[in-house]
Figure 1 (cartoon, rainbow, N blue to C red):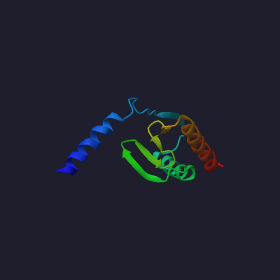
Figure 2 (figure 1 turned 45 degrees about the vertical axis):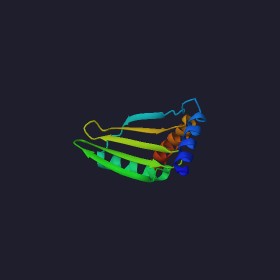
Figure 3 (figure 1 turned 90 degrees about the vertical axis):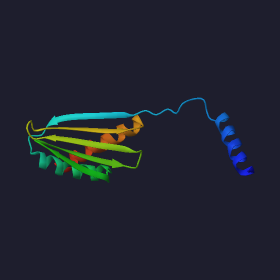
Length: 121
């Protein structure tokens, strides 16, 4: 009987000591788009290489659709996410890097752009 009373008392005390300010979370996203003039298959191959170079090695996934393919990658550093969309109908590609720190997103976004330059050399 004393243990449930102790738990109840601790719970009530915990409520009084909770911070009154809500948690602050912010999501930042940087995007880019360009014409590649290559197939969506080749675009995904490039995105996979770029993700590996830039450190997006977790939970990699390719989602295929009609005339397009999307690549998704994740890194625990941050955490940050990468999405690359490849549209063979238009020969267009777009990418997005997102995370909770705008400075970190900027850094990871630049890593992705540098990785694209690396594989194009």
